[in-house]
Image (cartoon, rainbow, N blue to C red; front, side):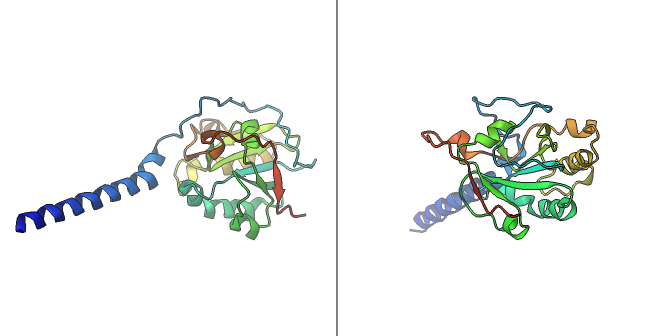
Length: 211
């Protein structure tokens, strides 16, 4: 009888351990590796003219914040993004790009337009296949920067705050710093539009567009 109980307890412990390892893998380990590039991905290089219907002519650089509420990595950098917006909003036009029509409380709080990109049309145009990612366009719509916010997931490493350094250079119309050009491969979650198939809609909806 005691042997049966011992076997049962061991089975329960093994199951719990397996569950803990699975959760740890899902939330931590897999995000330490670069995001897998989709086979259909087309590289878009800096200097490419990007045409997006929702953008209006302006004299300010444009910052596209690719965010997925279902991606843990997207949630990691929310405080950093909040700081960027509060610091540079008067000098830059910010937009949040989400993979569906979901609400995004932080962008609503910051009064930022939220663009739904369910088919990945905007992401493909900018060469993006992961979240969180930042894209900076010049006022004329030229791709200036695309890539990670930071080498660290929590955006706490000042020396590798790639998106902010790029933004500072874009505002002053300076060449992209060499250190930022070496930002590296995207880290985070694949876009749903790259992992889901069977959708035929080509609609890009604009929600929460503030003046």
